[in-house]
Image (cartoon, rainbow, N blue to C red):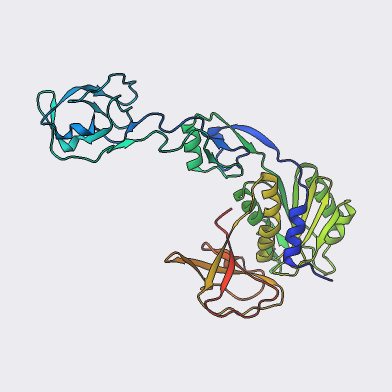
Length: 403
């Protein structure tokens, strides 16, 4: 079987038409974790007028050389101060308050002494001290949050400050996940057969897709029976945008998934990619729905889901890139195990502003070792033309905490 290069498979995926981005309007308080489907633009300056950033006395800076300055009264936060301050006068002004007209500086309470409705200056401050200028935070017309941004706590806070009651977000694509294999036991199932294995793929991938902003549909485990798998696939495609299966894509007698996909009327986009792990990956399309058939080993299915399923869901969400990729320097020698494009679990450290890669506690073995992805791991990419790499070589790395 001739394998596509990794780069070609990614280009083919990028060219797939996933249709227009579906959107919905949500209350701001319910939008956490969703992807913005609109730019958030400031309608006014922040602040809209010079504002005190500390408690103190608003006055003219030139008056700091005066022996005493008359206090006209208080200016609490939220008060629409209209008094005009003249030379030799000040107003006690609190954090967040509008600076009175005629003032240009706020001297902090601890810098003055108060006696008989007057202040004397104990320690001078610079011009415009403790005054937030108009537009310090942002200016009218600024794009504060770009479309395609995942909404987190900071985005919630900024939008609340803009009085965004409702937010336009991308509708989460629905991803159905099923594990296949008669040897696979679902959670809670009991067996006296030591040759059976516990299912983890469907739970791993559902968590991955949810974390990346999709809605996951857990379909559990299907035995190696063609008709049962085909019916499960058909049911899933009726309600999901993407069907992701694990297992049944290799060349064994019981690897039925690769034969079932064409029976469903799906067109194979590509089958087989020169990557390790996961070279038997299949991507297919039926109308506006997609099928991704991934290998059965836990590490393989997770890596290929990141490389292919997340790229599809990000397209449906209007996100430019599904994950962050960085350049890092090898802290130790790396022995490449194949002539394919490899994705190797690694650790990333940031030292003096530079990223470094090491493989401490990472086991070398089959593509079943999911524990290699614990402890904030990343994926190092080595290309088909790469051989063994020396310490100090720069490599590309996918960060797995950036979904």
